[in-house]
Length: 582
Image (cartoon, rainbow, N blue to C red):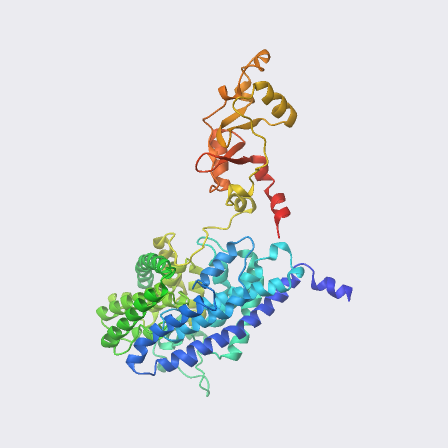
């Protein structure tokens, strides 16, 4: 028995086993969430009269706001952003008691026609379940594994809702950073994602998330009726020559088109990121009733305009119907551009009104519409090419997750158009710059010491220090502080006001016989900087280096002395954190 326990708790075994458990639990949760929001509510809503579809989003936003406000005790509407926030917290927390509240608010928003995606609540659910399992089995895990199950849970959530396990892994690894990935969580995320995918498709089925990507005529750009059937079943088989032609048929014009689309998607991603940041700010306003009424009325108006233009309220829901409409041939550039604008407006309004949902699918929708616009403009004769490239480019630019975006295209299309999709996604990243629709993203992973430098100076501040008054003599300073306490620099403080620093360099020119008469206040250095409590340790180190000192006084905004910060205390910060860890 002891030997079995030793094996079970050896190395990575516990975290890998718990990753599998996380994947299964996430799949069941997301299956129930999707069934209620997409099947029970949204599919039925889309069969109702136009007037009912137009007013339904307002009801969903109001219900979501009330759920977050009362049972949720004023929970914020964020979902996938909460994964990023928790990932970068020292002690990540996503209480399990909040999960049903967020899921119910997401069902209300999306199921009643809000223009957000299912993946946001799915990522939140996966992250929360991963942390919950980590807390339950904490004694099995190492300290460095604290965030592994958080990431694995997020990967499982994406893998389930998109039926794309590799995309789930890559998205969870890319999402916390704009220009980096979280490599340490790779293996547990793979196991969680695979488990979640297998469990999910057995509960929900294999139907594609974005149907047009799996349409052979759209995906390949050929008339599949001209290819010979190799089977008596309903499955269409291709021989090796057919497949080689399909996956290597990349024309020079495709690459140039991908470059143009990458530029447009990068600009669109920057604009979308700015609008999303504005909308998230609006969603945090305390007067929820006003924003819900305004948002609901705006969504109703957008649905009516869309119905007049397209004979269908294409602004309702995450946008799958809009994608299906736009990839059909013979639509004019004006109508496609109008749909692009209406869908962006619907997403931003839903977000600003406090709706709960994700941005992955809305970004994918904008990319498909932009891609179809570009393909129509260039008079492309390859159906499905430009919408697919647009999806990869716009999604990658918006979330700063180009690898995930291209992988989603690869998994959804069976590998077609991957080469031009890589080009489009890469160009869109360059054009989009540092903008992102996701909050709490860091630029890159920080090293062990670099992470410490982002902490506030208060984390290494010593407030139990002796100071010297300005009327003290040099002899008192030398005997009490330098010889008695081996301090080379001491803060000079009158009452509570910081005046400057006194150190050996200031008294070095004073004769020993004059120590009893010379006053500290006449010799102190007032040119040295003092740190503020809002500074980070990095700010303090830069100030120390600039002034060539290894200690800084820390003062408040009025010049009141708070304490001292030394380079030695910063270097010993790991020991301090270990002592204070809960």
